[in-house]
Length: 426
Image 1: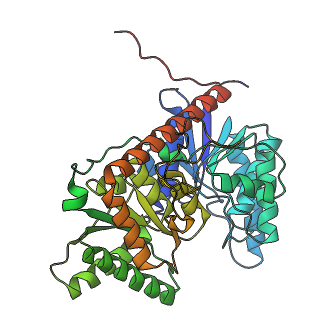
Image 2: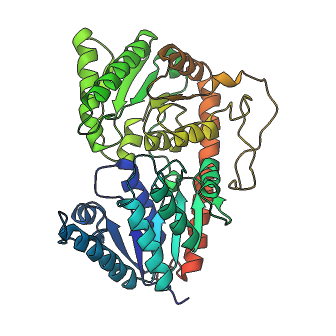
């Protein structure tokens, strides 16, 4: 193909989800120094243009009707609009995120848009690259069909974990997919690590919370907020200071409420609130932290990219997969180890050495709604007790994952016929 002069980056961006924005930023780095131009295809293009400094258009037609019988005309306008967008570029990239995770998705939303994106890319002969995406096969039949077609028609598909690779097969897609870590793991550490020895004397634990309930489910939000308050109090009782962080703009009200309730009961509690609004800000807020307990996937990504050991109180297999990759107990319950590279695994991760065996119940991924607070606190204590070795293991895995993501970037640039230009001689 001719060198790509203009590349579209498609995603659910502009809505305040830290991980989605960081994934777009990581995708845009593909074009740094190449002279190629980016076009973001976003849910809220005006927000993306302001935040990322790139040209952006909406996933849907901006003025199409949405209600009543005219809504059908609006859907047709969306399809035509997406076709014009694909025609205007030389290639299309979907950079990371869990965009192929179908739980809670309706067919007529993002799944239909992905189907149209893939169909137009195929028809107009524009390469479609799905890079380090999250996939599941637990969705309605309509969502599954749209996902399967988009995955089958894409020119390149890489997924961010082995569970996503299995899900691609579970959707009935018969193609080779490689596992390349989440694109946000490309980021280099920027925060100040904790001083040696402070894990025992002055431990600090980050707690990442989320707005479980969204705009409508007040009972779910209240139940989750109460459990989060209990977790923070238990960590404080264990002798740790606590720093509360969010993973999406919507989460900030829960984070503020958790801190308010803890301080209301104990005005001198060693708890603080970070109002970080990007993955990079969250990573900075974790400076000095010895561990993170979090529900949001990209809070965990921010932590491990900084060398901070993690415990997940999450809501899906992606959190468990990330924790398994970064825990020194790994998937096989061995101390100071990492899972060996499988047939889909990225190269360069540390091999699994021999070591003492622990019970597999010791895994550090828990369900958001049913985790046992005492178990989570015990696992944090374990991290603090052997912090130097735990953090060194996380850093080693992060270095390998960072290298794998950057190697994928090199392959993509080669495929698109673009290269980083050497600076002009003085």
